[in-house]
Image 1 (tube, rainbow, N blue to C red):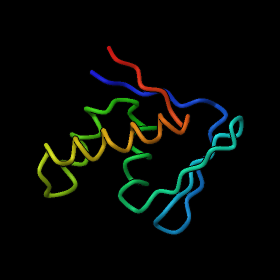
Image 2: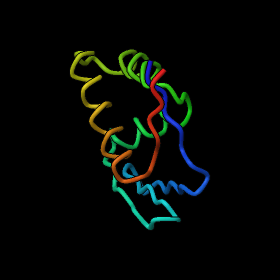
Image 3: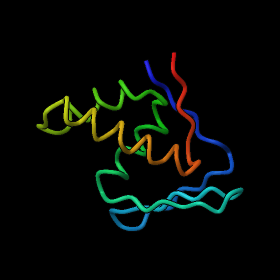
Image 4: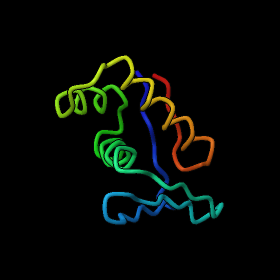
Length: 89
């Protein structure tokens, strides 16, 4: 199971249906579209990638394999930009 951890130095700003995530320490930021914003909100709520896949699968009629790949890709991009940490358990 993959979990994520978000530093206290991270700011999230909702901009209509999009958002920006900013790391105050590194000054790295990442813009998120509407679906990325929804994923971020659920990641911060649950802290667990599997729970996010399950929740989005309930809300949207999408292929769960593709959904999992999209979430994994977003998490990797955010981790590469120091906006979250991936914890393998």
